[in-house]
Length: 599
Image (cartoon, rainbow, N blue to C red):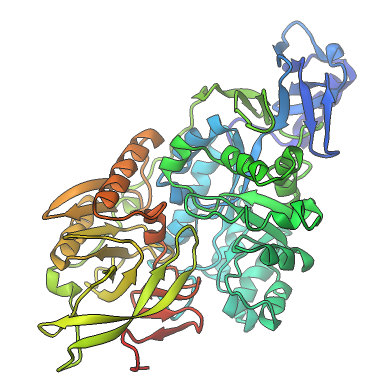
């Protein structure tokens, strides 16, 4: 059941009575400057009256709404802005459950999130989505769920713990907190008219809900137009100004993301700030933010500040993080602005450019002040089946991570995954690697990478090579966060360390383990689905900080290298990835060979 909040239809009589002065408001905020994202105005002296968790009156004088039991808050000449909305995100990327994620972001002014739990869907299927959905509805802020669309993300190129079917999608569309379909990553399937993908989209359309998009190809020709015709209404995979323009010209919302590792706002927001396109079709989001970013840097407040620093007008930037998002999901009568009938989600801030989040109300309740959480975020009772998800089948040994060379070879030209800093795409590289004792060895900045099957205990290991992390010495890092199939990704320079890191995660039930010179240097425990912890965000962030420090000590200098690590199995983003079925050429959507010339 949603956290102590009633729908508009049940409270409308009281809202009208308060606005008319026949009944007293629960809360009145006076003495501020209201930022109206509907009209793009700043209205000095405007006041708001709240009843039943919703705005009842918004205007120049709310004195007629004040009664004996009304709490009156003096804004102190500060700005009143709507609570911030994250239009596209994955809670699991924060390594936190919905409750702990909410507790982390509420002090940053995020009062609404549209979340796609496709990470847990790959591990636990519809059952896992239901658990996320149910904890989301328990929170004192608005967490809406998009039903995951692609598990697996690319059928035939990976094996997931569970699959999502059109029947699952149709069932979920009846749940109270489901607002649409999660990002449709299988864009080749949509373009080819795949019946399963189109059936999921049709079930969403019949329910009158929004279809999320994900078109990662650089091809803006016929395939792109065919994808848009298939129904996806937004896209967050753009990295260039032309990407944003192409999307909005086709009637899509262009979602500009600033996550822990994705810096795609600056390169695209010029479509508004310089080209002058209508900003109503541009939306800000985070996509993926790990706990360290949330605790140390912020959430949607960080994104809005960044957009402003990139030259966007502050009120326009706020529109992109409030009303534009609400409108996109058909919820502009419920969310995204300070206007009668909407949920009373409001922030008091003393400056629109630097955007300090000083006081946060959600549904008319004080939820945070000066960075301190003032409410409880209830936890779901996660069952054992959600906590026992790492099944290796056997103890791994160094030999599992050996890449055999063709007989007699002294050197091998291998296909190598090239990491691109601060971006999701990788590069398909060719590198000459030495052969020792019949095995291909890492060299010159190239490390080993392995995908370890962890859902069914098959004991399977797929090996390859990756460049860009800069690791040195004898080290390894293993993670059960491996978008999107969430097997286990192990990267390292030393096969024994790789086996040790993988076995450690099998022992603790999931997370991230960093090893160097024969010893574990950092561990982040993620016992729920191998993806999340129900510990407080600060504790998880401290462990994650230790992980980042251990990666640095092993020679890695990339910004948010762990996020890059966790995406190396995402077989729907070009150019080269790894899965339990082999090395994947995402440009062609096919399994490819590890060595050049063997195709």
